Image 1 (cartoon, rainbow, N blue to C red):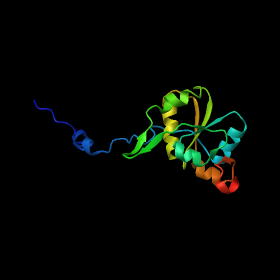
Image 2: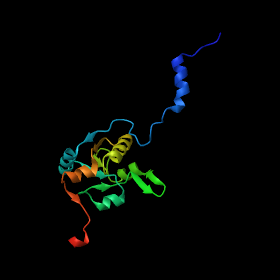
Image 3: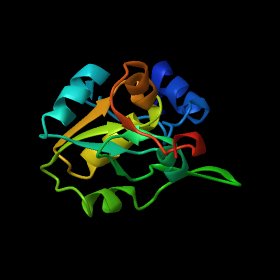
Image 4: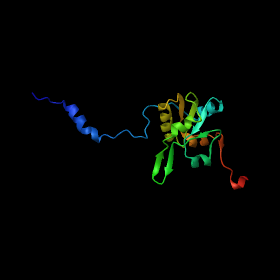
Length: 151
């Protein structure tokens, strides 16, 4: 007696190798997100810490006041490389119960970083939608390096 597989199963088995694998740069599940105004209010209240996940070079050009910088990616000659010690480095400065607002330039890296933090057991993480660009567009307080003209 021969057994025949249902056609749907056969199609799935044959098509599986053609399906795109889930990208390492796509959060596995929904990340809590707040807009820039809410993020500013939460950070301003003193109850939340702002974690900037941009590169050190980006951070030096300007950042949210009193923020912590732990890059999620590094840009190298080979391209973009994930900081493999990201969650460990954040854990050096933040407890897993701390309220953390995560931001980057536009909100993409911070969403990925937020997902990693949540997966690592951080309980109160929120991604800031729109990132630092939106923060600046709203005219909110930032630290910028002094130019020679300002000295």
